[in-house]
Length: 250
Image (tube, one colour):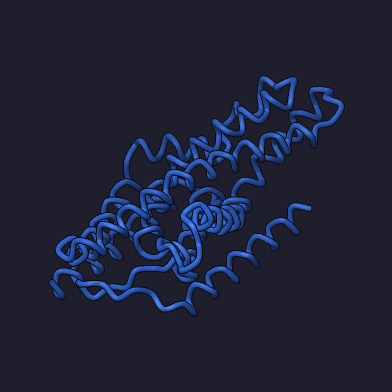
């Protein structure tokens, strides 16, 4: 069941990215192209655009986060079963639902912010010209964040730190809230990588693959903190290249 969910979400993400790649973006001052994902297409209302974005966002997040979430869900399922809960699978599903609800809330916040910035960039040519510079700075900052204690603390939680599956919740509601809290920790842990994805190209298949690889390595590799620093080095390098290219075009 989990494998089918992953394959379905990955297929939907690839299809969405391929569809977006066939649509011409809007050329902007500063030598960059605005993705159509942030624009209201002809004949579509903003609510319809938001629903479409959230559908693509959740398919992408399920595909990207499910592999690193599975070890935690498995430990939860074992803990629920060992405690004598009649239907451990139900509580485990509640944890997973709460977890992905946190990512849905993130998407709900991201879309209006992205739409607002896209609208401002179209109306203010000066802002549009500095967008590539800002994007490079965001990726640089995301790389620096990978070396922080704040990142290490949230990464420990996302890797399923001891204690998460203890104090077994006795209801689906409590399990859902535990999953939601866990999802919020993982949102904070991945804020740098998520921000990098947004500024590079939220539906760019290459960017999605790179972020997926970074998330999976730092959360599943034996030396998670070390892998987070490796990802940080890559992000700093990418940010420096983006920033140099952007300054060269200004």
